[in-house]
Image (tube, rainbow over all chains, first blue to last red):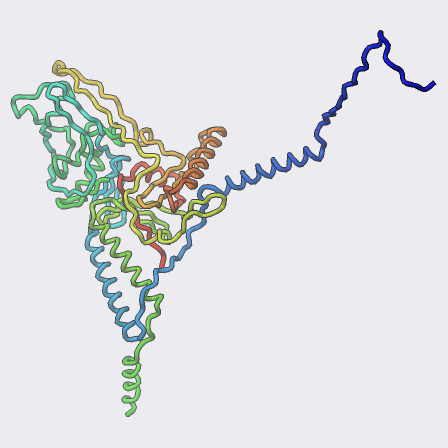
Length: 248
Length: 225
């Protein structure tokens, strides 16, 4: 029989069945993974390439440089005149430059590396191990004085030359040894300390010998240039009064 | 008559105008004079200066036209800053110009030690003086250094073999930090070095230059003409 069935008392009300949506999470496909990998690799390659192309790019320097152009006169006579003028200028400038360069023997002192060179023009005649200024600062708390033991840079001249020099010890020589300053000036004189010869430069700076040859090659002095006996003899023989001394 | 004709021919040849100098010849002569003038100004000055002659393969340390030191330059490369292959400066006009205020980077620190005078001692008492280090101990040379001049030019020197003693990781770290320094310098809004000259020198010369270069040195690069 076909008909409508009405709910009875004991019947439970019909429940709407909840709609279920099933989501299936699938792992990414192989193709997707490959694409991601490729993108990452491309980005990495781009970054690497950009990094490689960032910084300083060096190329061999061109061997010949083109001079900047100048205005050249139109007619030949004027061009000849300009050429002659430039050639004269060239000679004058070259002569002026040559005049400034030291002629004959000169001395070069590399105070950082403690080397002395006896030069003649561009030629090194002798290389000597020397000692230059220590750079120390000596403080005397008693008198609040201080001394800086640097060798000065620049050009000097041999002002005086003395064999068997006697050293007149300055105040710092007593202070650094913890000695009181002598009242009698005669107590300041000391022989033998400066070696066989002393070549006086300026402001009390000298090239002289030393008792402490084992310290040659180290920056130990109070500003003077110390040499070993053989090198001192060579410098003495090569450098008369007036010899330029370049210290750098 | 036999002698007259050759004499006339000679006279004609001597009075005939020679070939006019080319613009290039005149420009070279003028540039040479300009360089000589600059060398003269440097020689009259009170600063130390470097003369770089790539053609002659020399770098000379000069003072008042006197040669103080000469270093051999085995090669010269020119470098400009670039970001992602894009160059950020031009290569013009670094030659034949005087560059000033050269300073070492990293600087060669002066080991200035202050010593307090000892208290008065009894006569005859010896004071022990420490033996100072040698220049090699005092000034270790980095595996790469620059002499940086005002105006944007720097000289780059890499003493060959100076990093051999280091281990693999130290070298890797060194090359990484060098690249990083270069990259940041090239990318900065105003690169410090608009032109870098890489000088190829022997280890001895490269180290000697680092230890000896006085502060505030000038530089003139002599072009080959």
